[in-house]
Length: 300
Image 1 (cartoon, helix red, strand yellow):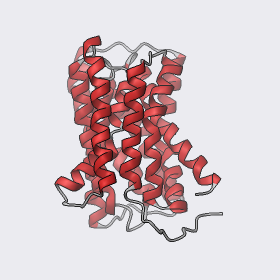
Image 2 (cartoon, rainbow, N blue to C red):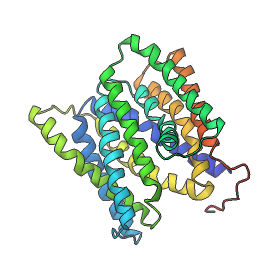
Image 3 (cartoon, rainbow, N blue to C red):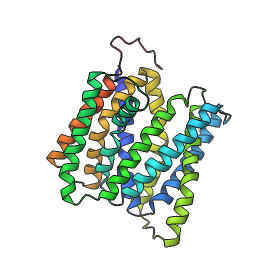
Image 4 (cartoon, helix red, strand yellow):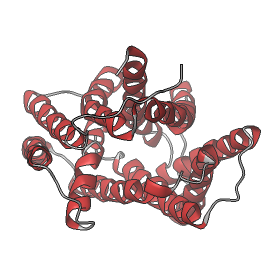
C-alpha cells in the first residue's frame, strides 16, 4: 500500500466520519427528514448530471436496478433517516460509534445468514466489537443517554449493513456514478412523504444561520458526493478488501471531529470502547485479506 493509497483512505474515513457532526448541526436548526430529503435531491441530481457528462447511462442491468433501489431505501432513507432523527437526542460521537460498527454487523450477517465462513481472527474481532459497544453503552446509559435515539441508530446500522450486502453486484455493469445518483434520488423520493406527513403539519421553525447553510452544503457535497469517487479510486488502487480496512478509523475520527467542532466530551471509558471497537473492525477486515495477495496496479 503506497502513500497515495494511505492518504485516500484517510481522506475517505475523515469525510465519512465528519458527516455525523454536520448532521448534528443541521438537525439542531431544521427538520431532519426534510433536510435529508432535500440533500439527496440536490446531490442526486448533481451525480446524475456528472454521470451523463461522463457518458454513463441510466439503462442499468436488472441486477443493478434491484441493488440500486434496495441501497437507496436501506442506506439513504432508513439508515440516514433514522440517524438524522436520532441525532436530535443523541450526540454525534455516539451516532458515529454505533454506525462505525457496520463492518462487524456485515460480517455477522454474512456468517449467520449467508453462511460465509469466519476465520478465528474475525470471530475475535466480532467479540471485541461487542465488548467495545458494551463498554460505551454501559457508561452512557447512566448518564442521560436517550434510549429511543440509540434504538433509532441501531436500526439504522442494521439497514446500512443490508444496503452494503445489496451493493455487492451493483457496479458490475458499469455506470457507477449513475448508480450513485439514482440511489440518492430514490432515497429522496422515499423520504419526502414522511417529511411532508410528519414535519410539515407542525410547521417547524428553521433557525437560519451561516453555520446551518455551511453544514448543509458540506454534508451534501463532501460526504454525499466527494467521498464516493475517492472510495472508488481507492478500491481501484488497492482492492476492495484492503480498502475496507480503513473503516477501523471511523470510530476515532467520528469522536474526534465531534469533540473538536461541537465540544462533545470524551470520557476515558469512551476512548477505551472506541479503541476496542476499532481493533475489532480491523481484525474482521484483515481476516479477509489473503496471505499472499496479487499486486494491484492502480492509477498513476
